[in-house]
Length: 340
Image (cartoon, rainbow, N blue to C red; front, side):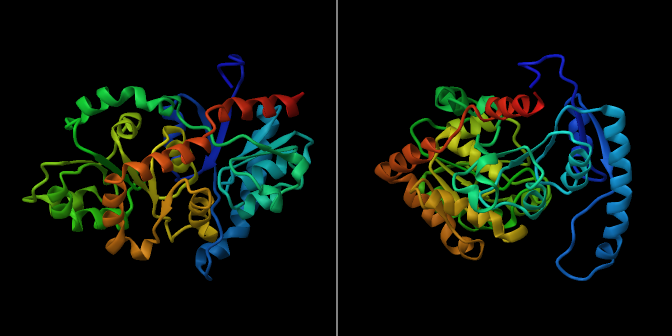
């Protein structure tokens, strides 16, 4: 938005206590916080607080909107989107929804009726939203993910890898994923025996525990990290990627054009990560292993793929076809259209 319209004023609204309250100011943008959270799936004290939180948030968001006077309000499906987009729509301000997943979240389904436009990442979202409001844009991701193949030599050097050996890149998001971590640590002897290299982002939540467990183990072909800023280089070096099936991770891997095994998290609303992964599996663009099966099957399956050139090429071609490199620009076009 800033590239096309440099004078654009942008205000973020987040949930107090959540990551965005630090990350957005770090990126140089202003953010206001609401006292809001989702409903728990069982009866808890937090659920009893929900109506109070919602009321307080509605009062505050009305004041924020009155002071900021936005031309468009954009929601991406988090808890904050509910009160923010409802308040905006009630004042006649155009609203846009961006649904990242192949399965629409409850908040977005409720807000869709009053939204002027709905940007989605997957085809066939008309089962959740009015078809005339839908634009298939894809999910916006960092520009450095595009054309990562051109960075392979740089990536090999950065990670200190052998260019003649195959490489697996495994990660479970910035916090990490225990199932993926446990699967890798169990099969370190097999990975070493196969001469396969591994780039492993353990994640901040699990790093200390696994760092201690890795002490004394032979890690000659394994590069492990708490967190990687250089995701573009990790993709560039990878022959196969192991990942959770979050919408943005999938969008990045599609653009990178890498053969992938997705291990959907079982701890997400409506099991939407499984639905995300299956959207690719149906196109023969990726493989999926259930979280409950990963400890036994994940690494053996990854080793099979990394050693099968024909399968890797087929998966790479198919997943690259699903990438949408112009997603951010296409969403901006919709924002401008409804603002006018």
